[in-house]
Each structure stands twice: as C-alpha cells, then as structure tokens.
Length: 115
Length: 119
Image 1 (cartoon, one colour):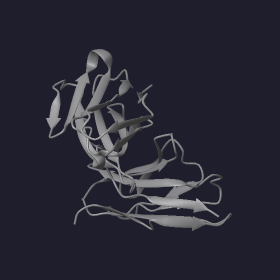
Image 2 (image 1 turned 30 degrees about the vertical axis):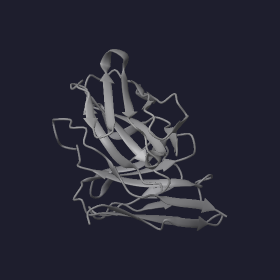
Image 3 (image 1 turned 120 degrees about the horizontal axis):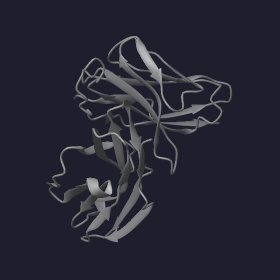
C-alpha cells in the first residue's frame, strides 16, 4: 500500500524565520515520484516540485529547498526567511509506477506566517 | 493563457438535485482527473480519464458521474445519490501515461476549484 504522512497539522512562525515541513511516504515500488503543492487561501493547488525516486539530490529554488532521503522515506520542504505570502496549506504527494493514475496525498500542513 | 478552467466557482445544490461542474483545459493533456477535498482529509480521487471516451472510477466514485467526449473537457455531475456532496472539488490534468512503456510520473496540474454546498 502507498501512503503519505504529514504529521504537522499546523505551524505558526514569525516572518523571516525558517520553517521545515515534514513528509514521510510509504511504498514498496522502486519507481515513484514525489511532489509538493501549495494551496493558498484562494484554493487552487500550485505545483512546486517533482522529484523521482532515483534522484536523491537536494534542490534549492530561491527561498525553497527540498531534502529527499530514501533511507528515511522522507521528502522535507524548507522555507528560508519566511514571508506572509508563504501562508498556505502545503501538500506532499506520491505517484507510483504500479498505480500511475493518481496522486496519493498527505493531509496537508497549514503554515501561518505572522508579520 | 494556458491552463485549467473550472466553473462555477461557487455552486449551491438543493436536496435531490443533480449538478454539473465544468472543467476545461487547453494544455493538450490527455489525462484528466477529479478530486474532492474535505477539511483535514487531503484530496481524494473521484474519477479519472486517460483518453477521450474512456474513464475510470477512483476511490470515491459513488454518487458521481463523468463524461469525456472531448480531450479538453471533463465535466463532473454530482448526483442526488451522493449523500454528502458539500466539499471543494478540484479538476486536474496531466500528460498521459497510458500506452507508454516508461513511467514518467508526469506532473498533475490543478484548476482553481469549485465549492459545492447543499442547501
């Protein structure tokens, strides 16, 4: 079975703090893809990153960075110097080779950044 | 602009009524999806379609129906058989994986969503 766990339901930080959102996944498939999406208050899901299971290199995009560790089945997301505009719900998701037709989502982490 | 358009943004349904949510994409994607979002439960797959004139049930298809007569369009009907339809509905699309030997895990892109409330 496949599963994504985001244990942090809600996180509150003050602007300019760094914050890490945790994501732990479960799958027996050796080929899979991991994703992060952002859902601002307006509701749409905005794609942030896609990472395949064969590429464990960390990635940085501006203030965003992702740490993928197969040994711990984790794909954590860090926002450096957070801003109020980062306030949103963030979802981690998994797509596997033998169930290609859907994304398996975690329950999301609500991030509130206060000025 | 390229993207996925859902309408209406807000919809109210009376008990016993069927309602249809529209989803159109101009990304030339083969695959389209409908997800339902309830508070604290993430997103759950209702139906998906990998090609025109074909669609499959997802995890929570009961009380819903879809059609895929055109590549660009994938409307969702919430029928009176759906006992708890109040939710946020998201349509999505991606480059299809059907008929390909290589699994590419193509990114699934989402529309802006539709709020459905039963009154």
